[in-house]
Every structure is written in C-alpha cells, then in structure tokens.
Image 1 (cartoon, rainbow, N blue to C red):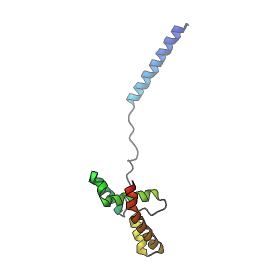
Image 2 (image 1 turned 135 degrees about the vertical axis):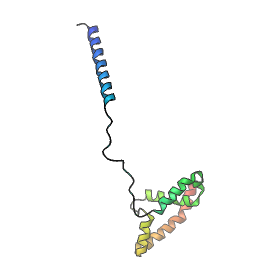
Image 3 (image 1 turned 180 degrees about the horizontal axis):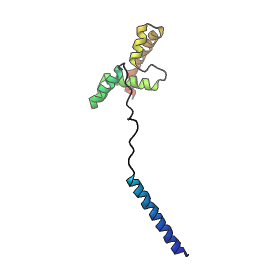
Image 4 (image 1 turned 60 degrees about the vertical axis):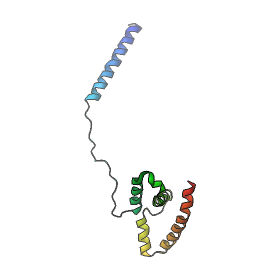
Length: 124
C-alpha cells in the first residue's frame, strides 16, 4: 500500500465519521428540562426601596434628575457595598419598633449618611 492510497483511505474515513456525527446530531430530540426555570423568591414584606427603584427605572432619562431616585440609588449602593447590614428598610423599622438601643444608634448613623450622601453623589 503506497502513501497516496493510505491518504485517500484516511480522507474517506474522516468524511464518513463527519457525516455520521452530523446525522446523529440532526436526528437527536431536544430534551425538555425537568424543572421549570427558577423564579425570584417572593417575600411577604414589601421593600419600599425596591418599589422606589422600579419607579425610578420607569422614569427613564428623568431618573438621574429626580432627588428621590438619587437617594434610592445611594441606599441601594450602601446596602450592596456594606456587608452585614440589614437587607431591608422593613428590618430596620422592625428593630426601631422594638425599641432596642441599637436602633437608636443606627438611626443616628443613618442620619449622618443622609447628610453625607448629597456630597458623595455630586462627586460622582
């Protein structure tokens, strides 16, 4: 067997494997997922910040000029970037309602953050 014959035999084998793989792929049925897609978890407590963020999103180009939206975005950034804080405003309201000492301290910290927030937003 010479080199040309071996090369032809290899080429024919390669084409046969490629055609077989293509036929198998085209005739394969698409599998249906066993579980339905994940949906966001629904909580009983409504977070006013999420409602405000959705409102700001619906404003479009007017959102960056709205002071309420600027405050909501600042609070959202603070929650995201500050580890270990309460997830929702409702959590803080509940702790304030309980009258804990930490609630008074957190309200003082929150007041300082509100005073500093407009300066931070102007720098951005």
